[in-house]
Image (tube, rainbow, N blue to C red; front, side):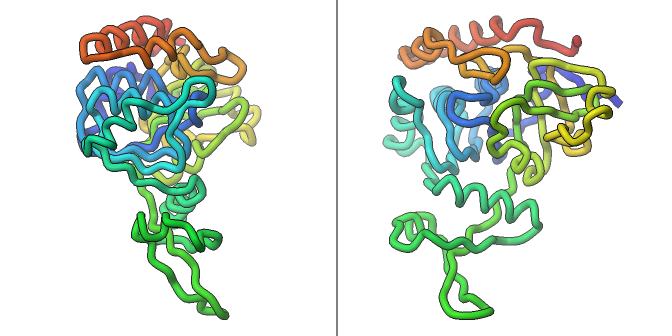
Length: 273
């Protein structure tokens, strides 16, 4: 059965208050069209999960959609600087910054994949993160010493942008894969946006290249340009002018116009191939 749908319908499946994992990394293959649509739909109280976020997190904070962010790093890459909307929201107490190391976010997702309440890590000794996050320690049952126990992170939904998908939900990632496959396994539900919708035969011919198996996915959206103004390997680079245009937004009306422009730039969005 085909899982193809529109971006509007797919994002309509995300509820206020959901824990949402966002794929990609900083300005690369982040699900920007999906984030913009969540903002346009007026979503509220989202708990975002991201190892290294940038404009996706910043945009949702600007729209007032976010209650908290579990993250290892939130900032643009040079030359764009910090995420001003995220920073301001945290400073004003509107968003809780649940700072982690990238690796502790990864281990929390892995614990969810394995069906465990936590996974132990080493290497945080001397870090303020243990106290800041309230991480507990567990004794080594096979010898001396203690390890930091990282609690499981189980997103309600993972939203991932891929280069290719089929109508059954199989997804293929070109270039760096980041934590997308891990997020897909850890989340209760998965939504894919894709540059191209291809025939299932392409996946059947090379099953070893399937990064996101279709049985994990509940909805697929044909969204060319779905990572813009960030990059998508093999398709386009960072759109400097559009990143800077977003950073120059000063109020709700300007943000609304910017979101509408993003929707217009997501060419041919819909269920077509």
